[in-house]
Amino acid sequence: MDEEPLEEWAARREAGRPRTGERRAVPLGDSETRGGHVNPQAPRGVTEWDGHQWVPAGVTEDRESALETTGQGTAGDAARVPLPCFSNLPPAPEPWRPTQIFRRPG
Image 1 (cartoon, rainbow, N blue to C red):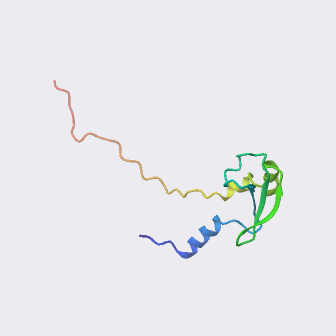
Image 2 (image 1 turned 180 degrees about the horizontal axis):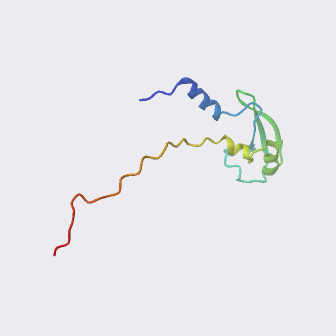
Image 3 (image 1 turned 30 degrees about the vertical axis):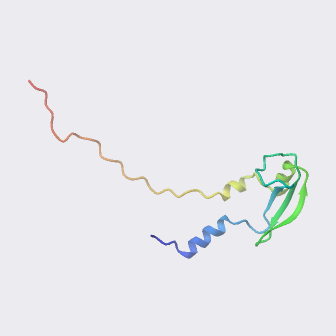
């Protein structure tokens, strides 16, 4: 089994973690956490990452104002998604050729 160097693992781990000061919106209420698109009129709590945990930072009226406050749904989110690394494609196989020479009779 190939072992990943510690520096590469640490860089990959840090790339997936939130940055200090990053904000997210969480639906308020007693129900379990669901997708942000569920009940868009419900109030949202805004939390901020302080480097160790998510701490409360405020409350918004609905989903739309929460997205404006947190800056979510922007191109910055798409830039954080890691893309898989593709290696070069293998060489193309040789075209099939019959192993015997076929001749028509006559």
